Amino acid sequence: MTEQTQLKENKMGVLPIGKLLVNISLPIIISMTVQALYNIVDSMFVSQISEQALTAVSLIFPMQNLIISIAAGTAVGFNALISRALGAKEYSRANRVAQHAIFLTVLSTAIVAAVMMLLSDPFVTLQTTDPMIRDDAILYMRICCGVCIGIFFSITLERLLTSTGKTVYTMIGQLTGAITNIIMDPVLIFGLGPFPKMGIAGAAWATVLGQCLGAVLDLIFNIRVNKEISLSMKGFRPEGALISEIYRIAVPSIIVQSIGSVMTFGMNLILMQYLKNSTAAAVFGVYFKLNSIFFMPVFGLNNGLVPIVAYNYGAGYRKRIIHARRLGTNAAVVIMAVGTAIFWLMPKELLGIFNASDNMLAIGEPALRIISLSFPFAGYCISTSSVMQALGSAFYSMINSLTRQLIILLPSAFILAAMFRREGGLPAIWFSFLIAEAASVIMITALYRKVYRQKIAALPG
Image (cartoon, rainbow, N blue to C red; front, side, top):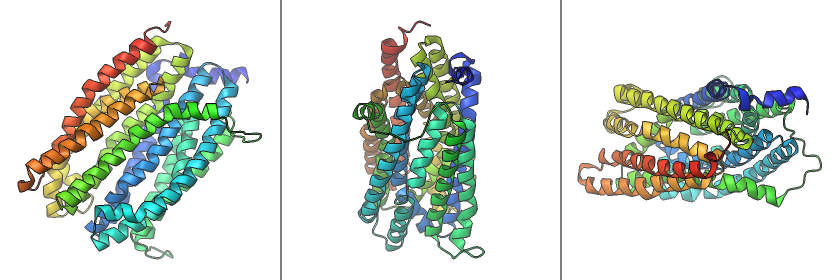
């Protein structure tokens, strides 16, 4: 390990926190914002097929989110360990963790792809019996979720670059994948040029193509510029103890992120089966596409925050951890407050992007306004949870997310839907998001104070 390389790594321990957070997070924020935009473009083109097609895509969102949760959650585990190892100057350990990241990604891809193909029919049938929605949803799920190699490897390879602070390259990879998806969406959906008209299958293949191309670029970047860690698998042997250590951090993160999939699936069941309102399900799907414009930058911010906190925890820099947490949380809350303002001022214009009918506008406008009231609370909770994950206390994040989305949000949604069922259950059901996030703020604050006393307060400086 050269002196020059060590100086590059040490920037996480010596650069001013504000500058460091901007340098690492800004490229991720840009790339993830573009990711959010191409998801919106994807649904925008699908909505031009029909409202039923838009509903079909919305029903598959929980499974797409589940795949991302597994990949990103696993990445939290090895990313935190690599950053800590580099902070403690344990370069050999950092390389071993990186090798295990590749191994676990291959294994996870194979298992998840097989499961998704088997579950596509029963998963969709459980939510709807409408033959048009059902057939489109099954087809979309088999392509988007069954061919998941691109999303798994792109996330893993991006996080390896992030763990050493090379987030500009992750931005290039994500931008390339996103732009590919945006270009190929209309080409494959409507059959432009020499390509056949594929409808909703075209939207799925455009997504897969973008993910795979982004993963290829990320692999090239890791090999050529990420010299702090090695991806060579020569002589690799799986180490049970290291895999266990990765998953001790990763499993709570996977569960935390997967809970969102369970919540979305539960809401779809309430809307589709209990309230018998497929348009409301389409609105709910559109809401998740739109909220990603603000949630993705916050997630990007926290993807940069995690290695900063983990590195400085490994190096024993208490004041830098506190400063990073404060800046990250404040920025997250401001971003989400802007989101609330835009959702309140422009709900009709936002829904119009998706060719919304009068009925969809009537349901969607109050939905966007009510749910967005919870955004600033969510920003605070997401940032605080990320800090706890970086410190190795991901279990607390899991407990908070489980309580918020399954113990509070879904029961609240069902109770409100039942109480106001005579009026259609809407818009009362949307207040469940505000109730859940307000409770989450109280809980996550108490948990963070406990982590602070246990892990941060005793650090030297």
